[in-house]
Amino acid sequence: EKGGFDHFMLKEIYDQPRCISDCMRGRLLLKEKRIVLSTINLHRNELVNAGRFVIVACGTSWHAGLIGKQLIEQWAKIPVEVEYASEFRYRNPVILPGDVVIAISQSGETADTLAAFELAKKSGALCFGIVNAVGSSIARASDTGIYIHVGPEIGVASTKAFTGQVTVLTLFALALGHELGTIPQQEYEDTIEELGRIPGKIKTVLEKDSKIKDIARTLTYAENALYMGRGYNYPVALEGALKLKEISYIHAEGYPAAEMKHGPIALIDEDMPVVFVATHHQLYKKILSNIEEVKARNGRIIAIVTEGDEAVSDIAEATIEVPPTLAPLAPLLSVIPLQLTAYHVAVEKGLNVDQPRNLAKSVTVE
Ligand code: M6R
Image (tube, rainbow, N blue to C red; front, side):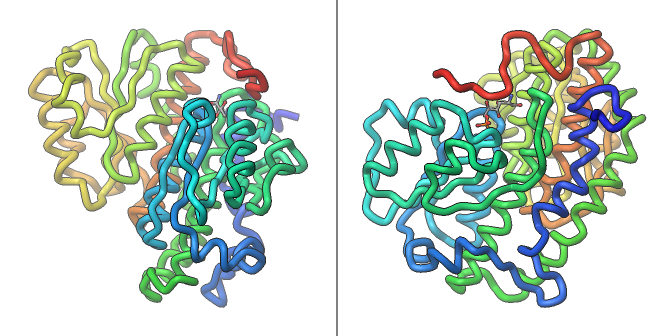
């Protein structure tokens, strides 16, 4: 059932081109350059008139939520808050009329996310589920929502569910922006076309696996690592760090790269690997100067860059190239090398990749 792969995690990483196609099937209409989501047909009024979206989630799903916030704010111009479900549920949160609460959960059984969702429902918010497991508790508690349809995820480290969640959030934000007229028609169509190319581009990244494995080997004996990204790649940095922590047992922190100066830069010396997600987008020059700052302090730089990059490649110890894409779609490509890196480090250390110590696939107790 591992389809010839050594671990479920690796199989699930390699499944992503197909999963993302499945997730978009019937929703992304390439010929008509249009997105069709039943939730928008059924709940158009509540969604276009939403005063605010509040996303509740945990772990990797929370990282997907951070990307969702940027997408919805960019295209639909509706404010979004992203909350740890465990904090939200006990804070006596303000839920206003017109709020739409989105729960993101692969399993649909995470206790804190379910409780946050139920609280939102009691307060009268429209409850919108972004779930993988069909018929799960969160799916059943939803008034509406979008399944990610990436198939069962067995490895404890979430991989294809993350890219599925980000894909669904992208479709939703685009469709909502289109309904509202807040996204220019050309940008809407260009993004649809580029989404259609994403599965193929993920395949291209997967072809770099043997290089990624070599780079990962150099991280095996690290005790700490920093992950840095900006804009759409900031949550990707958080996700890369979480992947490394949970399966490789290496302490890793993700940061928005500009925050480095406010503390973490003190950690940098020749033993500190710093993984930069530095693809060619609006903040590229800014992140380049963050990379130079780390270089000046002898940090070891590993960077995810866009094909053909020169500036970062000149100063980094190692780079992994991903194909060019639009900024809002960057996470779907840049996260792949980080998933593979964590996987190879864990394998190299002889660890139980699919079932890391102390962790459960679904956290059904708080
Ligand atoms: O099933 P959920 O998406 O609600 O799970 C949330 C987290 O427990 C989950 O993403 C966890 O952080 C993963 N092990 C990360 O790889």
